[in-house]
Length: 540
Image (cartoon, rainbow, N blue to C red; front, side, top):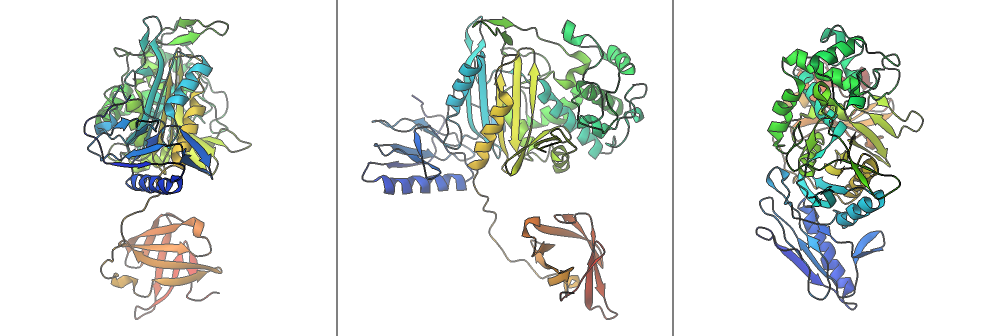
């Protein structure tokens, strides 16, 4: 039985019987609406049935408790006498720290514990850890299995796992941060910063997107010896590296490409890339459980025998100078924080421009169906009408996945201590799909009137026409906006003033293009030109 944690949050309860199911359902949905409108994650067990496309409680004396936590409190979970629901309120912690003993259900009225148990059992892996968050709030975490099979130690949500290539997302973010500060250029060749390699012609941008034609691995015996090269060995090996295709021709995953990026960071900062990541990302985000060496209490990695229910312990590979490719260890809690930062939740650490660059497609992986591509450091997968982002990781004894949706700031993390078996990427993506589907609709701030419209916009606002398309220019929220009436899907364009007679589109349609206001000799507006297209007050 779950017990209260800290001080409990407000509770909205309703008991339903066969005679009162309709009224209790109304109470339930109203309570649910209040909770999600407050931006909280509302979590319940799987004791539901599908009706009319929504989750509805059984009518056999079910009790619905919805605990809505404030940002300063934790929530409680309880089971009502007589057979009821497990219900857990939203859980918000400083830096999203997770109570290790907590076992809640999967957000969106689905059971995350059941998902973890199913994946661990069906995949035959020692353990599975799942976590979800939305808009900086932890929704649910679950851990099933053994962190150490030999000792019998059960897994807890605080246990660190090797996260493999998710490390690359940190490396990419640091490279983009340095580019934003002008310390390196994304469209510069490697040779500008790291002369003497065989990949000098490849652009920094192409390395980030795995489109540089660089061979997959550094030409050393790392995967045979399970030891990475030191700095001198790496530099020597890069001189003898090779390209497998011309730069920019296609996507080809390359660990060596990210090893090169690590050396570029060292050259432009004078500090090794791991230290730069610590200073610019891990420290500011409070990711104290993320480290470059196996921390105390970390999960043990295993290879599961394919023909018997036996596991074999895998060695811990020290990647040394290529550690920025896959050396990091982390926890579900830290990765949920990192995922939220990649979704735009921490602009003070990962700037909006860096987030945008990581989510902007550079190359298609699936060149026939266009369902999968790559940004600058993130996998981009089309799932229905949305594109989600993330990364997976695989190292001897470990699998990991991070999936996120920027629009709703939904994040899912999956960790396992097995070389193969668990479908971590698929599971993380499916969990994010569910989070997206249950995300509260953004209401926005109340409308308030502003002061006077600037005098220079006299004669500019209102309806204008260009090439038979109607565009409406408005002054809203202290800025000039334009909306294409015949193409509402294009959204609104926002402008910033350039000079007395010109503006520039800074977001929306035709971003970057100039809007010029034409006036006669007495200052009356006679027309507009946007991206050189003339706009008139009547259709022409």
